[in-house]
Image 1 (cartoon, rainbow, N blue to C red):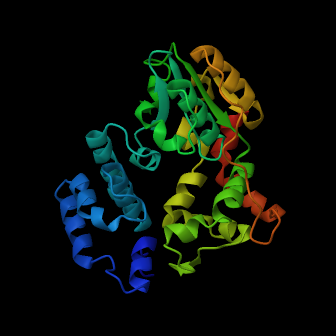
Image 2 (cartoon, rainbow, N blue to C red; image 1 turned 120 degrees about the vertical axis):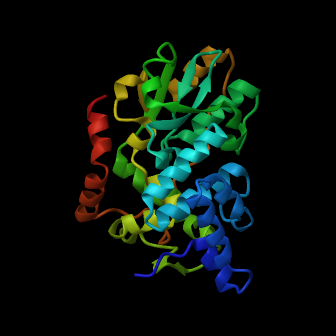
Length: 309
């Protein structure tokens, strides 16, 4: 089987406008082979428009390319190099590094630590923190709260952060997957990542819910957006929920807001930033029993995590 083509590269090639040059890939690989994966990410910077051009985005681009090319060991080495150079990388890089670490929001003064998981109310809670810390809300809470991000090793939760109030939000893993489909994929996230191509690497960029389940590993290989949002919660949180002070549910966002109101002596607006949308057919799609079984098996570690709370 031919090596996958980066969706952004495919989009540029389809428009006959400066496709991802082979010599750039060779230069990036040369830099990697000589122990400089971070330099490799800088080499491909001009071609990372689908993800971003800052240093963290470039590192994310390189790691995603290596994972897509089925080179997990290379991706892990590149991710570990990014951690060394950047202090805290993107969550996808932290997960790919496989060093037992995550990205958390940490307030050293208030001794509060929040580990966000995709599709678990993170946009809303990050906005709570933005308001508590800066006195205003933001539609771009993910970026506005950036200065509070920290690379946190799981073994530090019981040591360095032992006296912190540590929390996260969990939800049923299959419901979380369906929420990602309804809110992101149905709204065109994969088409945007591929620069509005209809197909890339043999995959449609506007799949049905059933198609994503049937080819979940393939979609995770090709699309960064898909992989980040479908990574098991245990890759974000670690395997021991007892290391946290509390695990909230999606129905307990109001309790988080109340806690932060007290901690920061403020009054955070009761506002949720995102809600799931209907699928392409006008209604929210439903899983068959077989599809639910596939996802239940894929998220076995998450269900074990929930059982341990």
